[in-house]
Length: 465
Image 1: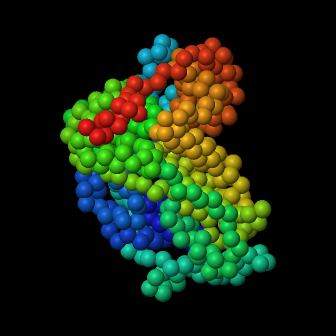
Image 2: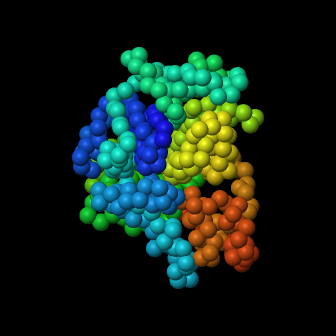
Image 3: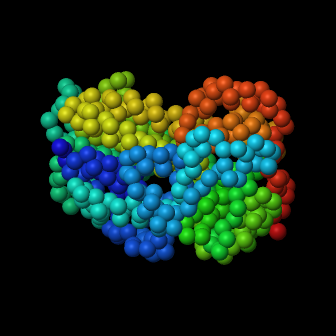
């Protein structure tokens, strides 16, 4: 077996490390933040400092793909999350009222998932990692770069480990970059003499205003978690231990939205959204948490079929990251960790083949989720901007409009929509199903049912009242 260093001890880094350790590898996780996870969910939320994770207290969710991969690769992890207060979410229990056929179907259990607030989830994963044989987690270790080793391919540098900020050199057969969206690995590769990787990066135009609540009776979901409302969107998410969150998303250049930092203004806007207003029926446990400057970024360490470096792979947000409001990051990251586990099992002794196979599988299995989200984000941002300026927005994709309309009336189309949202299936695969195509033909021309809420003029009045 081999030695592996995982750079970054967040959810995906620790899960990747546990998978590889279960295959018999000696795995060391190096995490820059010094504090260990607290022992209780309440402490994890209130006192755990994770300065290396900018979105640590922003809303997160775990979709069905995360649960599916976890059950296959890390059995028992979801049970631990439930024991810590995580909640089961079943969107089939809250079908839209227009769906009259509510009979169960084979495979419905696949759509269910467990979710929790990010600090609670990460504390559960950290606890499991500490118990994993063959896995060592070192916290408070700052990293400075890669250690060069003998090349595995002419002209291609090979990373044989990492160098810490204190000058310590740690060797490994494989280095896994799980340092998230702000990873410094591109600079490290330049220092190693590698040709540039493929990097596509663009600052998102979105800003997030979030608030958490608690109460004896969590709100009942009556509509999709993410709902467009003209020039803003509203996100409602279940949490652990009787908590939940509300988020208003808008454009960072939409200056009037800055008033949402005021809790009274935030609550006033949500109260004007009839199908989400009941999510205010609890005790607020935070003020309004704002986050902007999110970067859409995609990195490939194999360019034109040739690796720019061997001995290093990237996983999770270190590979690609986008708008977190869709909630896909952790689910896609864990699916990619599963791919890495399989690639390492088959090709660790051949660094060049490992790099190629892992990149090919990533491109086929998880990259389409990234690109579809980027397209959706850009289209939604353009729509919000047009509404903000009082001009007609560009017409949406007619096929997807028909698909979404049919989902409100046809049970097979609705299930297909849930599979796409929860990262179980690509849109193209759902749309190719005969039952889905038939449902779209029957119901796709139904008039869209916009979610009631304030228009632009009413929103501005709410923000300035």
